[in-house]
Amino acid sequence: MIAICKREIRSFFNSPVGYVCIAALAALYGYYYYLVMAIGSTSYISAVYQTMFSFSMMIIPIITMKSMSDDQKNKTDQALLTAPVGVTSIVVGKFLACFFVFFVASTLGLLPAVAMSFFSSPSWGEIIGNYLGTLLYGGAMVSIGVFISSLTISQIIAAIGTFVVSVFLMYIDTLGGAVSSDAVATVVDWISFNNRYTTFTQGLFSISSTVFFLSVIAVFIFLTARRLESRRWI
Image (tube, helix red, strand yellow):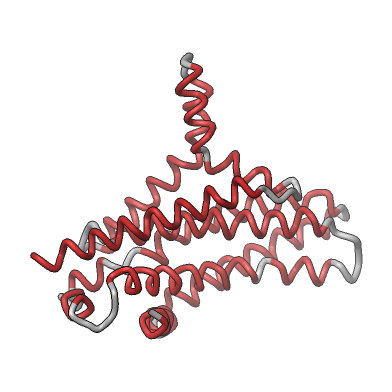
């Protein structure tokens, strides 16, 4: 699992993909923090992180698109399946590699906040809450992206599929408000990623939301492993 994770991380940084994703997010974080400093108020920091959260979700399809599809396209998945390592370990290794790139990109967003603390008193509760919420939401989306990548040999299709799911989950709240059925609204509210993420943006730590996101990660790692296992017989 560790060997696979290291190999995948190296592949990210042997190409421009990893650097471009990280540099783009870092530049955007810096720009929005500059705007906050120009305004002269730290009360907008939460809004900055929520804006950056949307940009963070957009890089996940790029990070995950080749995680599984590339092996299928190059026929190297069969070599992985015959290696002395469990299928779940293979999937977890690939998930951790993708999440590592997302983690690095998101963590860079804390640097402007640290710099700002020398000149003002930012709300660290909100900053850390937004950061943890982004990591948990992002981790869930990474697991979904890896699963979608396992369904196709096309990186483009995998990226588009993950992007569509990401947008759907971002705006599913509007569905709950549009339907007249209380039962449907309750279900939508329960599975809403945004509602659970919003708790963290308020500087609050939610155990139930944390368990929810971790459960989503576990479910999609399991589904990806089963998908990869099915290819043994193809």
